[in-house]
Length: 417
Length: 122
Image (cartoon, rainbow over all chains, first blue to last red; front, side, top):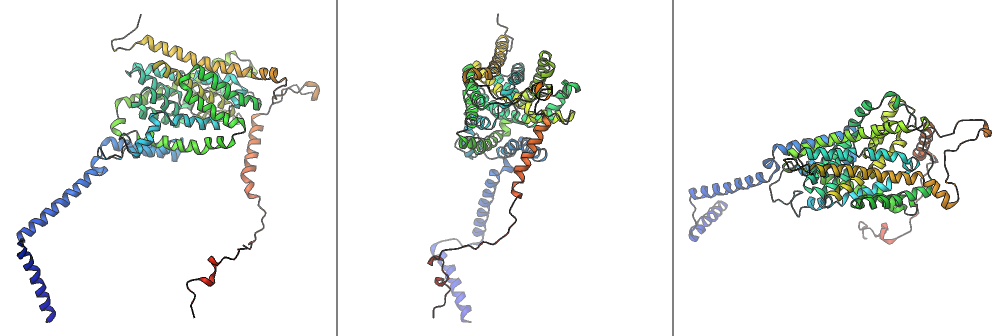
């Protein structure tokens, strides 16, 4: 009974204190306050909803997310350039998660983390570092032992200049056409480097087109090979390459660096780094540096390049008529470049003695796409003759294609800048 | 005369860039090719020694074989495969002796059981 009395007294005090303080205690006003509070809760939830990706999503975002997932699928299921397609595919997912403008997270918003990482792409920093790694892992022996195969790498650059004409015909401005044309070189870093200089607003489309087609080399090239190279020509066995002395291996990057950069100084960052990497490898006294360049360094740069290039494909920027044109031009340029290499190899055979003939299939490796196109040549070669291994021979036009596309990019930049 | 269309494209410039560009790429690689084709000769002149070449012609009087001797693709592939297998399988060549080595630890009061917090003080 005492307890009940105490409770009643406390409740009474609690009731009278607000009255003494002049506060309302009517049920109606209480209800009003509750409804106001629930109103702000709804408002908060509404704000939260507006901030989520679901509220900001557009059809374009979903299309691009599907493209990103498709890239990841291609990389995992078919092993098409997984080192590139996984970072790019994931980057596409990252870049197409919708967010409200001004959130400071988008790749095109200054101050965001992705924007800082993207700096390496827009300023052309990553491509030369990739070339450094490529130089440190490339063995130019096959090229040195059979220098005439360099011409196949030059012939395949017809893709670059063919695309240039095509891009202008499709209505692109001349600088844009120059940037797009480098897709024909089948060299992702070179394409990014050139577009950073000539048409920075097209970097995303150009990079994605270049890397997509590089990944699809095993799909694009074999039909063209079958179309242009006869069964008899595919059976041609080439003379094994001679052994190359260490002096020659050391001299190649030095002479190559001086010669190509004197001809095309605009390509110094690319060719300089490529040959510098090779000097590190071949000098034999900088193994640690060469090892870092061809392993950890190129891996780190590939991750950063892939993820940022992928993220740069925000639907609002990427899904345009121009991107579709660039993709179409990219496909045509790959076909032209492959055909150029194959036809030139056939033409070379007309002037070569029977014992020195070259298998025209290796002309397809003249497009850069190292080492995928050389691998495709090997696979196509062994389909016709399981004991005819063309990989070693195909690496020569393949690496000369890298040099050729960098020179072509340098020429394009010096003409148009 | 400039070949400019109504859309403002200067086609003569386009053709010049294409022609000159492609020619320069070709010339650059042609020059590199020429240099490295003659590099062994040049090195011979400089060093006075012959650059070692794997493609050796075996003279007919040596063994009566008239054909040039090369390492064929199959032999190269076989050597490559053998080396790969050898290096890959190296880890399998273990001693096969499984022992538990005694680990000798030096005494340290920091890890001593007698100073543990669970010791009952009497």
